Length: 178
Image (cartoon, rainbow, N blue to C red; front, side):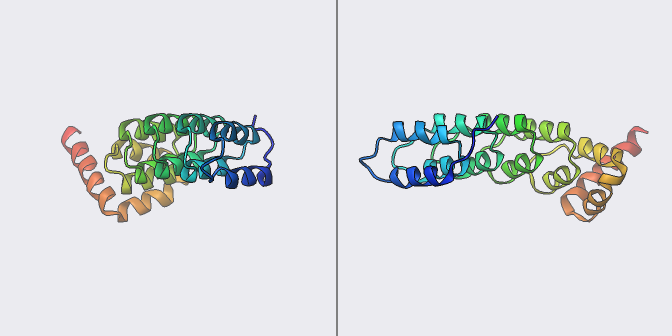
C-alpha cells in the first residue's frame, strides 16, 4: 500500500537537494518516506548526488509506472531490465509500450511477451506499429480473438505499413501451410 503523499514537504526537500552541501543520502531517505514518486523522479534528474538504485527501488515499490518509465528515459543511471520487469509486474500496457518505443535499451522479447500476456489491444497494435522487434502473428491472434475490443485496432493495423507487411507474411504462411 502506498504511503500518503505529502507533496509540499517533498517539493521543499527536492529543492533543498539541489544544493551541493545537502546531505543527499539522508534527503533521499526522507524523500522515499514521503512517498511522492514525481519528486523522487525529479531528484534523480537534478540532484548532484543521487543513489539511483534506491530511487529505482522506491519507484518500483510505489508502483509508479509513469515515473519508472520517465526515469528510464532521463536518469543518468538506470537498469532497463529491472525497469521492464517492474513495469510488467505493475501490469500497465501503456508504459510497457512507451518503454519499448523510447528507451535506449529494451528487451523486445520480454516486452512483447508481457504485452501479449496483458492482451491490451490498443497497445499490441501500437507496439506492432512502432517497435523494432515484435511478434505480429501472436498479437494478431489476440486482436482477432477479442472481437469487439480489437475491431478498431484490426482496422488500423490494415492501414499501417508495418502491420500490412507483417499481415501479408502471416497470410502467405497460412496459404502455404494450409
